[in-house]
Amino acid sequence: MNEYQEVVDKLIRWYQKNARDLPWRRTRNPYYIWLSEIMLQQTRVEAVKPYFERFIKVCPTIEALAFTHEETLLKLWEGLGYYSRVKNLKKAAQTVVEEYDGSLPSDYQALRRLKGIGPYTAGAIASIAFSLPYAAVDGNVLRVMSRLTADARDISLDATKKAWEDEITLMMPKGEEGTFTQALMELGATVCLPNGMPKCQACPVREFCQAYRKNTIMQYPVKSPKKQRKMEYLSVFFLAEGKKIALCKREEKGLLSGLWQLPNCPKDLALPVILREWGIISGEIRQIKTQKHIFTHIEWHMNCYYVNVRENENKTFLWLDQETVEKQYALPSAFKKIWQEGCSFLEE
Ligand code: SF4
Image 1 (spheres, rainbow, N blue to C red):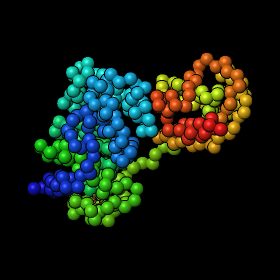
Image 2: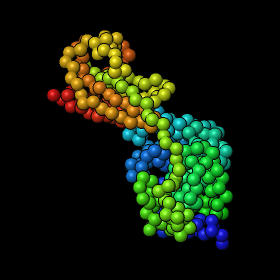
Image 3: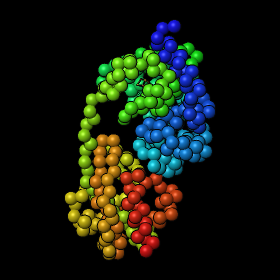
Image 4: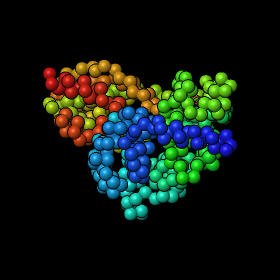
């Protein structure tokens, strides 16, 4: 047995003993694997679990997902962030219903053509659900592999990722493709950790790890520094007319596209000017605590206001009571604290 095969073998045995019991691992249902992988992008496992359980109750099949109203899906997704993921899930589900009779295709290229399924997700579905030899390479896997082999290629480059996809695909053990994929993911998530020291003493492949042998673990993975986030400064308004609160929709393109939000504008616009532009004459205005929200590439700094609306000629906002919004509308996390504070003023 060569060294690579031994690593693969050890990882698989370790995974079989140590895998965490997660709802989507109790099945090989391709839909569940797909959904969990999409939810897990940028989100911790513990946070995903309740969302996953709730989602499959409402949408137990791909067909159900395809026919569920987008507003309901956004509400199910509320708090997970990156809402384009769930919009793409719905679009892909519609394609699966139209073209594949409601079942995900067991073909890597066909999976890749579905909206929102990139190489990582296609590799995960293909290997875990269909036992096909395709790698699923994300940040966790790149970190593990670069430490294991003391590989100094920059993991933020697409070329490095692609090279690892090819190399891991060649390592895939026949008949255990899915277990190997999950073993690599699990090692990265629970042992070979990012940000600080990995738990090498608990690592099943420590004896093969080049970085461990050379005592150079902290040098891997090599990653070029991220670009600085763009700062945006906003004024955000909790406009209350009696018990009704204004919501408006974001544009269909860009950050949080097409989602509901609290009305807002660039911070440098004067308050009376913007309120007049919206057709609102205000009574009392209270300042709510300044909020900051960090997205992947943008940082919002928000000056927030509770505005008691005295006269309202606005034709563009939706005016809804608190209960309706909380039951039926998905409000992005960036606005949550402002919403809660605004609602506390309503009760006074
Ligand atoms: Fe990661 Fe340590 Fe295992 Fe190497 S020995 S793969 S650094 S956990």
